[in-house]
Length: 380
Ligand SMILES: Cc1cc2nc3c(=O)[nH]c(=O)nc-3n(C[C@H](O)[C@H](O)[C@H](O)COP(=O)(O)OP(=O)(O)OC[C@H]3O[C@@H](n4cnc5c(N)ncnc54)[C@H](O)[C@@H]3O)c2cc1C
Image 1 (cartoon, protein in one colour):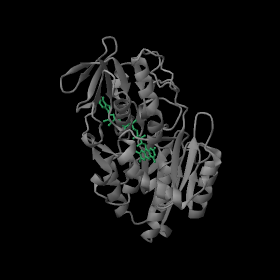
Image 2 (image 1 turned 180 degrees about the vertical axis):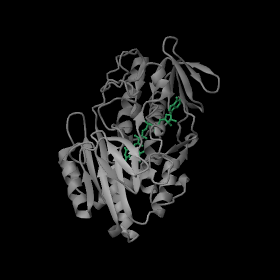
Image 3 (image 1 turned 90 degrees about the horizontal axis):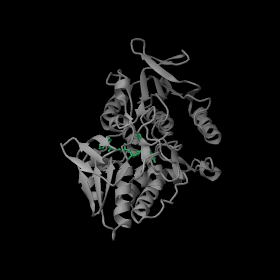
Image 4 (image 1 turned 90 degrees about the vertical axis):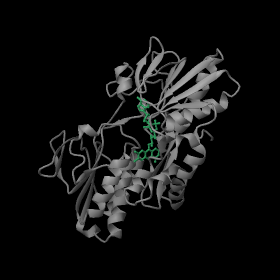
C-alpha cells in the first residue's frame, strides 16, 4: 500500500486528490487530504461579493460533497513535516507517515504586515471577513478618492485589482456619486498589466471611464494619520478609501521544514511539478514558485501532471508527464464584460482573446457553476 498525503485542501489539493482517486482506482494506494477547513470557497467571487450581499453559501461547498470515494479528509493543520522520516505532525496530536507528499498549502495572506487593516478606510477583498468589512466601507462611501494597489508581487489572480477598479467605477455610477469620486489604480510597472497588449487595452478602457493609472508605484507603507499611501520611491498618494491587496507569502509549515524560498514559496520544477531536490514530493498551486500566475486556472491545468507523475512513480516508471504552463485568465471590465487571455510558458496572451466581449463576461460568471459541478471534482 502506497500512502499519498496532500497538505492543503484548497482548489489545488482537492483537485489533485480527486484526480488521483479517479485515475488510480485499481492501484493499491491510500489518499489522505489534510485540511483544517470543512468548506471550500470559490475565491473569484470575492471580487463581485465586495459589491453585493450574496449569502456565503452561494459560493462555498462542504468538502465532503466534492471529495471522491477513496480520499480521506483529516480536518487538521499540518504543523511539522519531517522529511527524513517521511512523517507529518498534525494539530490534533497525530503523526502520519507518507510515501508520496503533495504540498498544496497555497499562499498565506500576511495581513499582520499591514497593521492598518481593520480600520475604517483600509480594506481588501482576498478573504471572507475582509470582504465583508469592505462591503460596509463601500456602502458608507459617499464620494472622495478610492485608491487600489497591490502591496507585493506576486499576488493571487494578477488582474483582480485591475478588475476591482472597473467594478467600483460602475458601482459609483450606479449610486450616482461617480462625479464626486476619483479612482486611482497604482501598479509597480510602467503599464497597468505585465503584458504590453493587455496593458494597452486596460489603459484605453481606464481612460474612457476616467480611472487614473499611477505607474511605477511600489507600495511601502501607509501614513494612517494623513491618509496617504507611500511608495518605496517616496511618492505619496492621498486616499479616502484604500484597497490594498495583502502581502502574500508561504505557510509556516513549509518555511520551518526548509521547503520554501525567500518568500516561503516552494521551489518547484516547472514541468514535472516535483519539489526541487526532493524525491517523491510534488507541489501545486499558489504555494509554489512557478513562473505563472497564482490562479485557480493554473491549479486546474497542472493537477493532471501531479496525479499522473505520482501514479507513474508508483508503477516504478519515470515521472514523464509535463505541465506546459498553459492557463487561461478572464479580465473583468464591467459586471457583464470580460477579456479572455490564453498563456503558456512559451507564449504571451494570445491576441484573439483580447476582445472585451459580453460572451466572456457570461463565461466568467458561468465558471462558478463549472467550478463546483466539475472542476473541483476533478472532471475536465
Ligand atoms: C479575489 C480573488 C479573485 C480571484 N480570481 C481568480 C480568477 O478569476 N481565476 C482564477 O483562476 N483564479 C482566481 N483567483 C485565485 C484562485 O482562487 C487561487 O489561485 C486558488 O484558489 C489557489 O488554490 P490553492 O489550493 O493553491 O490555494 P488555497 O485556495 O489558498 O488553498 C490552500 C489550502 O491549504 C490549507 N493549508 C495551509 N496551510 C496548511 C497546513 N499547514 N496544514 C493543512 N492545510 C493547510 C489552507 O487552509 C487552504 O485551504 C482569485 C483569488 C482571489 C483572492
